[in-house]
Length: 265
Image 1: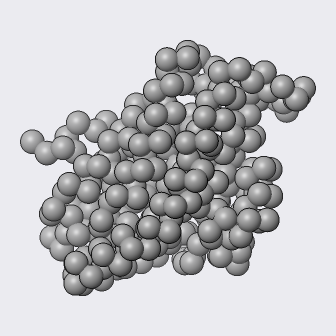
Image 2 (image 1 turned 30 degrees about the vertical axis):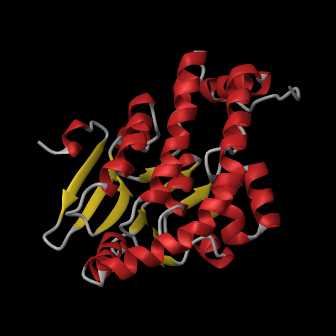
């Protein structure tokens, strides 16, 4: 029995050299986070951090997507207790990923939207396939981009670029994301997992204390940005979930497959 046996929507595979491949596994929904997957994401990084047999991590998605963000089908049916729980889980996801000592390589195989883009960008190295698409789409769903995007995007692409992409939800192809500095590596779909595993193996077989210490030192800067934005951003996101008519309209329009009509409240 291992801590990973309790997971339903995340799968795990460890190689002999200590590389743990972690796969978000709701391919029928483009790995969008329903209530269960979101809860499992709030567990997984703490479990990895405690896993002494793991020397490096490859994080990817099953099927055609890395993670398409939140499953908006569940948004309209959530009550206040559920939104409170989801916001607290969102906070834990970001804080826990910062505490993972092992290097994390994101292998982005398709859509990385909303929370999916945040998970990818909080990895230590991002390798994307040519088919990958990045966007923080919170505002399109009527939510504040509160679950980490406001911390990581400005550090990677500057404040003006971050504001434009987070306030519009506009998409970036993998090539555009690389040109902007959001990510570093773009490869063919066939090369994606081999390249990500090669980078993970190099780190897994290197000097562990030095590599993990360097990562954690750099994360001190990222933690400052998270400390400055996360609690406030999640508070504003929860307000949208619980009282914003525009948020309800966005989710309703998504369910009805039509363009939303926002009224500014």
